[in-house]
Length: 304
Image (cartoon, rainbow, N blue to C red; front, side, top):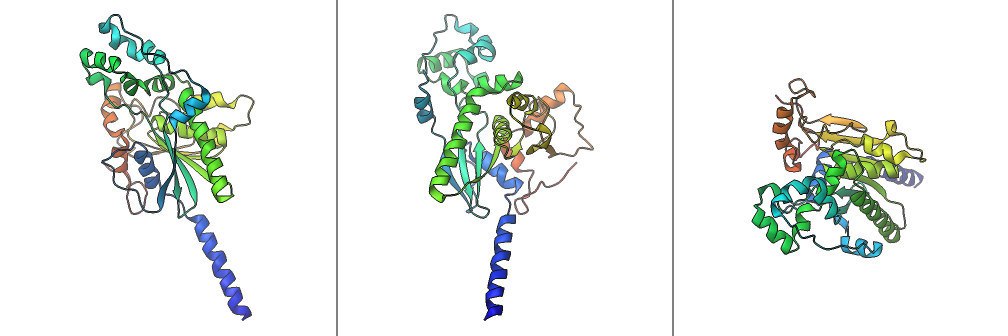
């Protein structure tokens, strides 16, 4: 009888140890970073991933008592195109953050995926008449909602609107999890492009982990978070998977470890500007998913 009890105890201990060692694969993080875009063409997630909570932008804004403002009439619509990359996006900003928390039932981890740049319409493909219709129909916000944040990142600044919204969402997820399970969640952040920046900044702020894709590089932005806080940027737990060097993933210096999803012996980091523009075709998260083995969850390896 004593031996039976000991065997049961040993097996229980072994099972618990194995459960703790179960990890989410890089491919699965990439899947979640893609899924948070709500792309209808994306395949369903593996069954052990369950969406846990979505960010509620309207509720968030109402709590902060944010004035959504009014559409500004453009006197000379021909000047619209010139204003968008500079002044316009700042004046018309309305937020636009979206995140989703998932539970990995195999590892009991909470993974928060932060959505990247989400343009419902491509402004560079619109005519002036179409832009005018969008302004009059109050649809211009769908075009511009992330551009101001991208502009901040390009200038080495924290996209504060989305970052603060992301932090609020992380807090909401923690509170909901603690209330439901009466325990502290293990949170890991993930995201693609703008979402990668948000994931990395949240990881630095919370001293947690981030697995990201096609990050523009967050080191100069994260340095702005240090202030009086004790944050060691040399010891952050961040891994980012990047395609061939392009205008986005070489924008700033990276934090943590960068894993290339290309043949580094053929494509060096010092590309010409034209090469970096051509490499942008590999930037979308759908293209990055092709660089992983679905069974092992790891990068397929360098290919010529």
